[in-house]
Length: 242
Image (tube, rainbow, N blue to C red; front, side, top):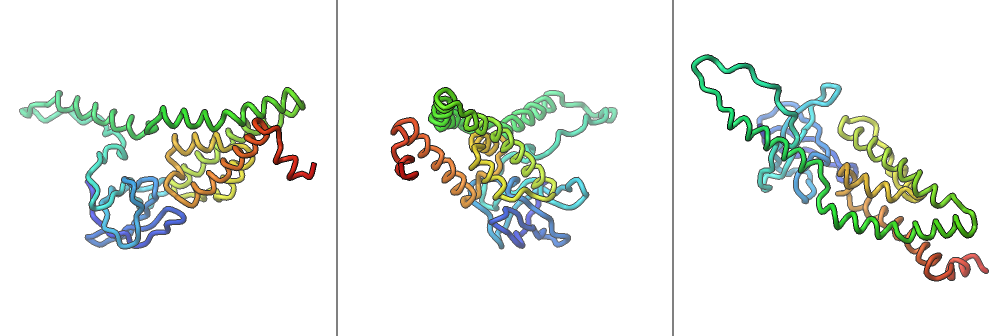
């Protein structure tokens, strides 16, 4: 059941804060990953939340929304209940209602795990990967340079792992990966994997400053390959003084 509280503190840069329950008691940790809605929270906001505990038994919110946001199903953040015991004698069971409840939980879980607007995002991702792929194959066939193609494939896998590890650490209140490490993996060719991880894991998608630097890195890669593939390295040669 949702409880009401006030966001006692909020670090927007790191994406976490603490909630003070309305009825008093111990404040509890909340991470941006459990926030519902598009608006970013701020200190002093009245919020509704579901309380739980992390792996170490510390209080934390497993679901949070702003007071003005219409209720989305809390079952998205709850584990399915264990099968209930046989109903007491004389009380009629309701199999139809139980069936609907189970179905609703399955639908809720599928929605939470799915990527929104999957087809447009997939098409955009493929478009961004097109020039780097063509250019990397040209380098492999023309100059015998395998490094660009290997970097895009290998470092993308590393980026996927780094995002997964950082997401898991955030959910369990463990040591986080520094953002400069994630950006370095993107710069070294892992941005395709980073984009996939952001959407599949729903991680680092709401922090504007992080997204700005991520897309600047992607833009730099695109400009390099536009010059290499379409302009015969005209500007690169000028930059190198040739």
